[in-house]
Image (tube, rainbow, N blue to C red; front, side):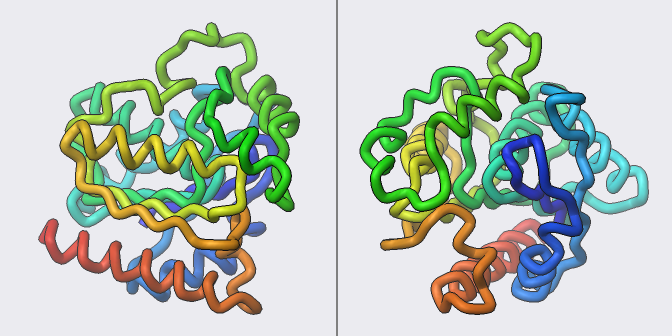
Length: 231
């Protein structure tokens, strides 16, 4: 499993996400590789995506089959996973067996999801202003019309099966809902679960919150099923 940590593309590392990555590895019974990708503002888009794509190609060079690899991440890492899949597809490279996304922000220019407004009063962690600021750092000097800065608006066909988990009380909810809707419309198999009353990155509270552990277990089952089907 290639796991991509969150942190708005400006912070986070394999160390900050060690516990959640370990829980996912145990639940899915897979080896875990957490990518220490480059961060903004020093290294804006597309540096992180290039790092992840290089990691995937390194695994292929080491003898791993693409069908034996899963890719996923939380928050910014989830959005990065989608960008990487689209990049690999458009470069005619093999794709992982499946992908999972935990509350991914899927665009860094328009911020046009309705939940930025409808969930603003109940989200305990994120604000639209925070997302816009991180977006400016991540986009850097790239043209805002660059397609991969708005992957939710791209053609999502020919992507592997997806599992999406998102909290009901977060401003990024609509990004996950749109991803599921547009991927299904493009013929992609999608499992979507909206967790009532849950917040951004609630899985990181697995020591204390039963729903967090349940979400991780369900994602683990999805990964195991995807690998069996791929084999």
